[in-house]
Amino acid sequence: MVKQKPIIRTDKWSLNPSALQRLLFAETVQVYRRLCRHLVGIVFTHWAELGGLSNQKVIPAVERLIHQTTQKPHVKYPGIDRVFHKFPSYYRRAAIAFAVGQVSSFVTRYQEWQSGTRSRRDAKPPTLNPNAGCYPVLYRGQCYKLHGTDRIEIKVFTGTDWVWTTVQISGLRERHEVDSNKLLSPSLICNQQACHLSVPFECHPVKRQPDQTVVAIDLGINTTATVTVVTFNGTVNHREFIHPGRDIDRRDKRLKSVAIRASKTMGKGGKLHKGFCSNTYRKCRHLNQQIAHIVSKRIVVLAKQFNAEAIVFEHLKGWRATGGRKRSNLRQRFHGWLKAMIRDYTEMKWQEVGGKTIDIVAAYTSKLAYDGSGVVQRDSKNYALAKFTSGKRYNCDLNGSQNTAARGILKLTRRKDSEGCSSKSSGRSPRSWACLCDLWTRNLQVSTDTITSRQQVV
Image 1 (cartoon, rainbow, N blue to C red):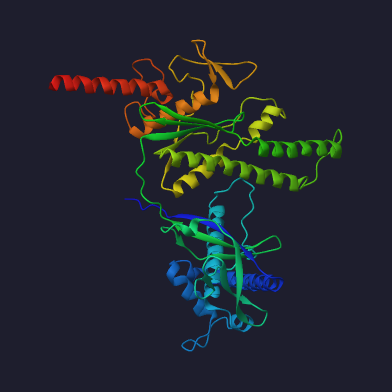
Image 2 (cartoon, rainbow, N blue to C red):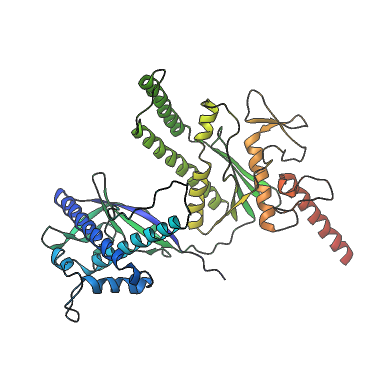
C-alpha cells in the first residue's frame, strides 16, 4: 500500500516589532545567510562523502567538519567557529540542512544536463547559487518560545551576542485552532516589505462521511465558475454563478493601460525595453491570485455545506485556445482564463478538509443537452446561451456543469457507463460523453429492477 504524503499548509503570522527589533531581525537574517554561503562551499567540496548519507547522518557529518567540541577539538574548518562565534546550535543545523539541499539540487540538475536532459539544445549548465535568499528556521525551545497566540520570544543576533526578544503577534489565521494539525518549525521572514513568521502545519483531516452528492464546476471566460450540486440519482440541489466582476474589471483596466503606454512608447515601430510595465503586470498577477482564491473558497464552502463526496472539474490541462484572431479581445480573455489556478487552489483547500477532486473528459460537456435531446445550438448574439433541439433556451455554462456532474458521478460509482469506456458495437457516442439524463435513466432502471425483484419474492 502506497503511503500517502502528508498535507503541509503554511500560515502567515504577522509580527509587530519595534524599530530596534526590526534591526535585530535583519541582523539575524544577514548573519544566517553568511553562514549558509560558507556552508554551501564546504558541503560541495565534500559532496563525494556526504552525498550518500541519510538526512539523519548528513548534518552530524558536516558538524564534525566545522564545529569544535571537547571530544573533537581539531576540525578541518576551524575558522567557522571563529567567525561565527557563539552561533546557536539549532540555527547552525538549520543552515547545514539548507546548504545540503542547495548542493543536492545543483548536483542533480547538473547530472541531468550532462546526460542530455535539457529544455533546449543550447541550454547552459546550471550554476550553484549560495546566495539563495534563505531565511532562518526556528526550532521550538531553542530558537523561539511561544506564549499563547499573542506573543512570541525569538533568539536574535545583536551584532556581538545572541539574546532573547519578545515580539507581539498582530495577525494569524485559524489552522492552529484545529486539534489534528501539527505545528512545524516556522521561518523568520524579515525584509524591506514585511516582517512575519511563515508557520507550516502538517494537516491530518478527519475521516469524512459524505453524502451521495458531487459539486461540479464549469470554468469559463464569460462566467468565471458555474457551480452545480447534483446527487447520485440526478437531482440538482443547487446552482450558482461565481464571478468576481470588480476584481476582473480592475485587472482588465490595468492591462488596457499597458497597451496604451506601449503604443505611446513605440509609436509605429520599435521595441519595448526589458521590464516594461513590470509593476503593472505584478499587480495583475496578484489580482489573478485574489480572484482564484475568492472562487475556490466559495466552491469549497458549497462542498462543505452539501457534504459532497467530491468536486468535479473538466480535464483542461494542456488546452489551447483555437478561437479569436491574434491580438484580439477574445484571445486576450482566453489568455486571462484562470482555469488551472482555480482548480489547483480548490484542490488544496478541499484536500485539507479530507475531500477529493476528480477530473473528467471535457469533450461535449457544453455541446450536448443535459436532457439528452442532442447537440445544442449557440446563440449568435449571446454565446453564453444555448438552444436545445426542442426549442428550449438554457445557459450553456449551467448545462455544461450539469453534464460534468453526471460524468463525475459515473466515474465515482465505477459502473460500465463510467469514464474511458466506449461502445463500439452499438454505434452510440462514447460513454465518456454522458449527460445528466443518463443518471435519470440509470436511477429509473434501478428502481424498476428493485420493484421487479420484490414482486418475484412476493
